[in-house]
Length: 239
Image 1 (tube, helix red, strand yellow):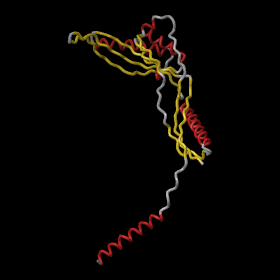
Image 2 (spheres, helix red, strand yellow):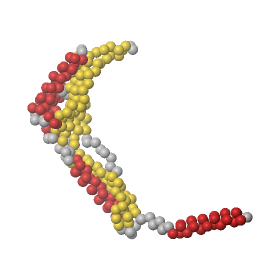
Image 3 (cartoon, helix red, strand yellow):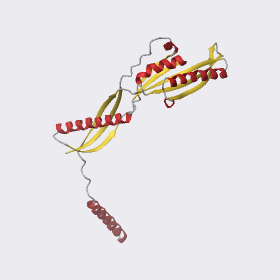
Image 4 (tube, helix red, strand yellow):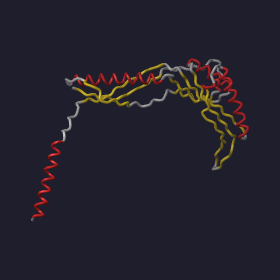
């Protein structure tokens, strides 16, 4: 009986001590009244850069001849493009391959010629010259124009401008919501950038480029405008 009494006394003492400690802990502050809203913005710019993707294909009965012919043709293309005033730093190789073609008939594979393909990307800092450089490249021996990509040189500045406008849009929305509820915006608690990366606009031009070279008229190219979008989520405290 003495042992049981001591056990009960220990349990009671522990419970009282835990209750006392809990009473001493400060109560959690009430949640801050807040509004969560989103903001969007679009900044439009006229492109001041163009990236033209080209390639030269060469066919031959053996891979060495295909490689040699392709090297000669691509060298001519690069020389003509450079002579048109395009700097070496604005020209880069995007890919190179040599493959053999095959015919398939009645379950049999018949080998054909080898194809050497050399891809090139040309950066143009004068967008208005895009059609001219296309014509120069095609006349020099380019066999395929894969596409034109337009962009702006100072994209970070345009992105920052779009973000600022998106924040202003979200803030205006939050203030409208708060006013409708008879409250006012106190301070910003959190801003989340929820943008989605949108790649620069690409004009698809998958075609055999030699057909362009036969035309006396220069190839027309219209860059249009670039859209830089921003989207943010804003959390503000209200009072």
